[in-house]
Length: 373
Image (cartoon, rainbow, N blue to C red; front, side, top):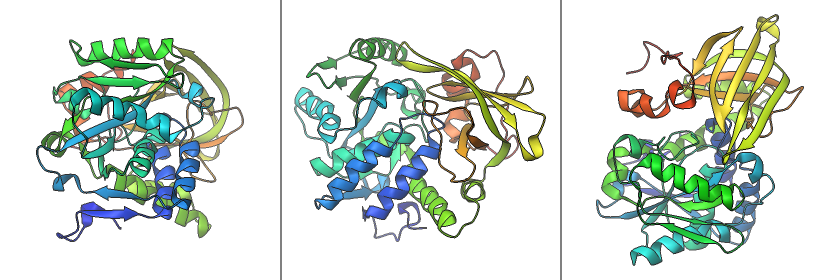
């Protein structure tokens, strides 16, 4: 694997190729667990930027100086709305410029809030046009819908300031908030008022904070995962098996989508999907709930998998991730569980992202019980 995690000790960065960007889009969409936004439009932007000669440098998080200043970037809002607001690198970089002006200091690097979906691609656009290196890390190792559902929030790091921009030239700075949950509530309300989609720069992180509390090497992980899926397709092998092998995952269910209920509300996409079993699952039904991302799945009425285990709904033939915003009747899907980052398996982590955080009165029971710390 061509990852910084397995680097030669002298290698602290690498230039991402156009093929790496293609693989990242595939891998991030799988790790997005249904959310983070479809990466396709951002991939199109990256293809254009690379054709114009722009490049992205990926840096080892452990090579950051302790006092380095890192911008944590994402889009915020309901994925369904994001389909109607096409990705724009100049829009993506606005909150970073706002934060630099607010702090009176330039950023040394950028990183993704979440490696999942379009938000895994988001900082690549900013890096390509702004000349910033991208840190091989994020704060979720997947996608989650709320600000307090991050490794840095679980660690109790500062939640402010935050900057937000929309396409209408509205710019908002949140200089302080009482807690991560308050920052989520206030910024989500503002996001809803400006159309349920916005570009954001979250609370800046120091190099020391990234090294201690980030989900490290998640960008390399997504690139490698996507590359293995693309290689399986090219060889006419099973891409689902490629994902399971790459991530030590478990196949939970194979079936056909027969019903989807969803609604955009309070800046989120909420709902559920019902999947009728095929092959070994004939006669069974799986209901998958979501709040931007898939949160809990019930097999014939009994919970079978729940967050923070990653619930990935993939196209059975292509291995592509299927977002909650594009799930539709008739799709043949494979439902997988992938292991969660260890930080979310702690008491504090489960409080932030366990099933009760999504309104389900369930004790967390991992598919990988006995296999994780």
